[in-house]
Length: 259
Length: 266
Image 1 (tube, each protein chain N blue to C red):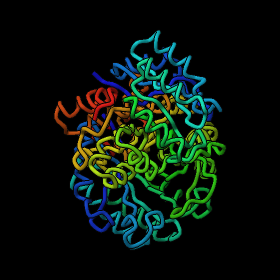
Image 2: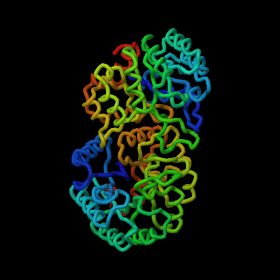
Image 3: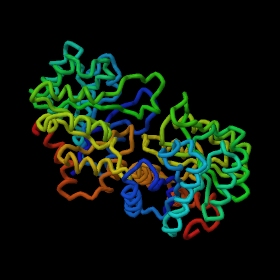
Image 4: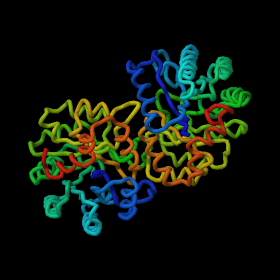
């Protein structure tokens, strides 16, 4: 079982990306032997009202049961509690908020309110450090990257808050993990999409120093090739149990709002 | 057969205290990926005694000695480029000749001088004399100066390539930072410019765009400092390309542009 927690559907405003329909993503999942995916409506992240893409997302996921909706919640819009309630009712494994793209302070009062409410509802908030390498972003794509300090602040904002952070590199992860108490650190999970393998061995180092229970399988497809995340795992020397945890067990645990 | 045209190993005299582990990791990962030959360059002392992209003459010699030593110790597994700094013209020519005599199979130009600068002409003429390809560090679509390097982009390399049609140029790491679309817009008419697919970038659509721009006959597989992205891209190419085209990218294009006898089954 392999669950990809970091998947998008729909076009990207800053470049032409192939393979963005649900059918295309499912074909890529077949190609890469990925069983299930947590998906977000990508165009919506750039809309004034990001949750306006959620209805399409729910309907698409209803049609394709391997896809699980991670709806966008914008805590700067007054309707956000209802958006969160609907996400819970529809069984979303997580809710998504990218404060940089939503022009919100990354650990401001809106984000704290959402993190606390989602935590109380048993849902992690999924958020990305970045969607693209800063060196290649479109000149008009100026949304700030998520700072590590914001992750530390959010996880400290309430005992039920849980986060899944995607597209983070080794330095970012270490700064948050070792800058948090053990209780805080165990409420953050990291996808592996932006962590380097050999010869730098960043992923192997993190698994040794932080532990495999903190990491989930994520690819960032279709913006990135899903084969890369699988190659990272194939280049590790880890036990089958550890690999299973990263590929599916940790995501399943996070989905239930546990540990 | 699989040739990584863009590899690096670290020498003892470098800022990395873990240089032995790093090099061992590269070789072990190469075994797992199935890399037959790593083609490596050593950029001086990688910043210990002079800047990585502006290596001093002494560091150039030290780095090339290290590369030559690697090639001797790993005779079936590692080949090397002679790295030169074109600001030291006589020294650069001498190092290319020394490296070629010691068995190095290409020239590495980092970012010591813009690629279309006239100072690079004598380096290219020397490479042509020995039949060596040139691997040029490239920032895809550079929009400003970046600290620590005098980075070139694809347009600048193509201007150099047009002046030296008998030299094969390897445009480094299409996934290594910057806007690869900027590069793909300029390279198609320059038949002596080959794209090295290495770099940490593995954007959806990038490989299709590379194939569309220059065809499989001008693509070279490589990793640079992230072997996971290299292997992931290779796996995707297995779906994207026909078997004959995949063989071109895996090794046959490299075997064509490097000197005869550079690789085991060449």
